[in-house]
Image (cartoon, rainbow, N blue to C red; front, side, top):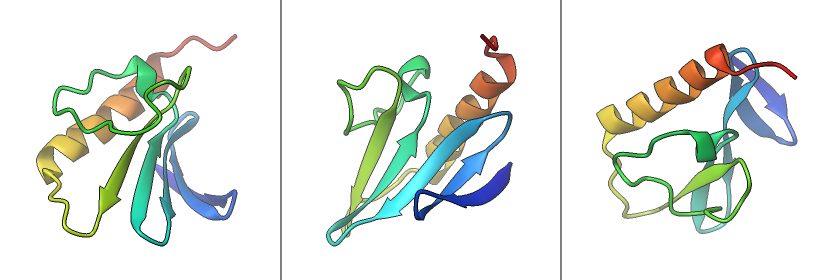
Length: 87
């Protein structure tokens, strides 16, 4: 993956944007650009659920994140970018 700085936030890409992170006053938002196309078996997505293509995870100070499951979700985002058909 490549990391870049876009829209005043870090963005990780592989054959297209995959994940972005943004810090807010009370939480961190992790946005998956093609999250609607991913299978979220761990139930991480808790924000942007009505968006057409993206899904997000809002993390607050005391939240606990299953690191292994999160890594699998990031890998799924990369896999999606590898296989999506360019229009």
